[in-house]
Amino acid sequence: MAGSFEGIREECGVFGIFGKSNCSEQIYYGISALQHRGQESCGIATCHNGDIEVIKGMGLVNKVFDEENLKGLGGSSGIAHVRYSTAGESKLHSAQPFLTKGANIKFALAHNGNLVNFWNLRDYFTERGHTFNTSSDTEVISKILVNEYIKEHDFVQAIKNMMRYLDGSYSLLILTTDALYAVRDPFGFRPLLLCEIPNGYALASEDCAFSLLESKVVRDVKPGEIIKIDKGGMTSDRIGKINRRAHCMFEYVYFARPDSTINGISVYKARKNLGGLLARDFPVKADVVSAVPYSGVAAAIGYSQKSGIPYTEVLLRNRFAGRSFIMPSQEMRDRVIKTKLIPVEEEIRGKDIILVDDSIVRGTTMKQIVGMMKQCGAKKVHLRISCPPVIAPCFYGVDMQQYKQFIANEKTVEEIRKFIGVDSLGYNTIGSLVEAIGISHNSLCMACVDEDYPTELGELRAKQMKLTDA
Image 1 (spheres, rainbow, N blue to C red):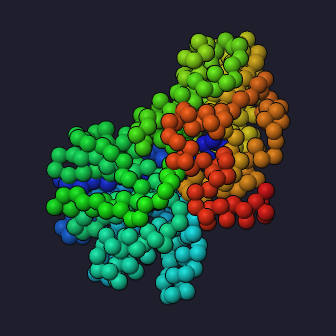
Image 2: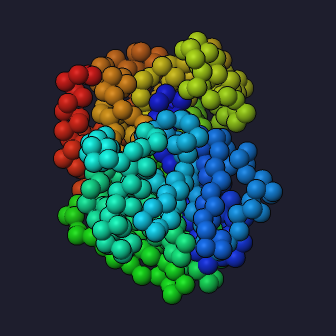
Image 3: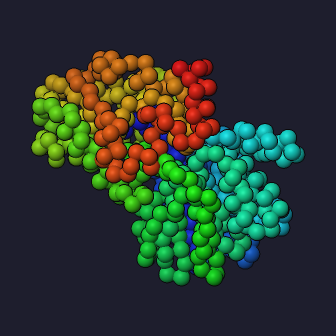
């Protein structure tokens, strides 16, 4: 996917379980299923004998954890996290879960999302004598929760009070010595799902993480909902209702694993629908339809089925290639990109090809991809993009932070076509995106394509940034 090469990064993923003896193995497999949401760092926290133990490290789940250190994480409840940093440094001290002690309470917290008012909150509490060890918004959430617990001596009420401070996206799992809490922000930006298992419950950013569990019931945690799970079972509470929802549309376009169902919508079906609508609105004669792997595949299949043009692979993904965004120079990043995607010359030479991808950010990577295909003898390359043009930054957990990142801010579609070097270019419209997902426009966050920010502070930040950054 061009998005992942050009600047759109995965967010984070959380997984939790309560009531499963020796739970660390199940947590390991659960968080491994969410590895696509973050590859920078990972961690597991479990409760055992009245204490909370945390192990975390930089890198992939299967590199940080092994049989030996998993055995050291006993207990029947725990939470885990995989991270790509949208707020905070890419260092071990910013890895999650965060362990916090204070006011006769100990808890570990894992967060998927991003606070728009992070720096405001950090400054506010710093002025009142609080100290911070990281630049992570998750640490700020933890400090507020401790502060409110000191006042209330009731954990659920402390969570409610904490939520009133927060502006932005957050799906939280909080592990105490006697309970597991799940919290989703009132807009429902980031997904969070609950499933019932024998003798307990599990929670995760996506239901694909439940695949190895004997799950009975799966549902979304409701926006604004606070779930408490302890030995007495599960209870639920909610803060005041907000009239609109703001489910991130990029979950359906790119982030989530294709086999996941989020907010009641099949991700795979949504992506196929996006491809079918591209075929309806931007038909063209060609020999084959193909995809930039992997997130473009379902949309390409949808395009193929709608158009009747056969689907084939013209690009293969080299899963052993290095990560281009950590390379020190653009020249080195360009070389890594060329090793990530391997052209299948036999399927390219002499053919007119419809190439489908999820998004275009800067356009430089897609230009390279098209150049490779032309070098391999493609007669024509027609590019179809399942997401509308990305034109605005995201402040809710997607790593798209500046107006100047987006080629669609500087160029028309025709100018982008010429820059990339394709024979034709078509994007889905905002209307088609809503139609494909099957959720009302007012229930989706699409600020990155329509600049309609769900929160006032998000809108204000965008206006300020536009003056200085566009």
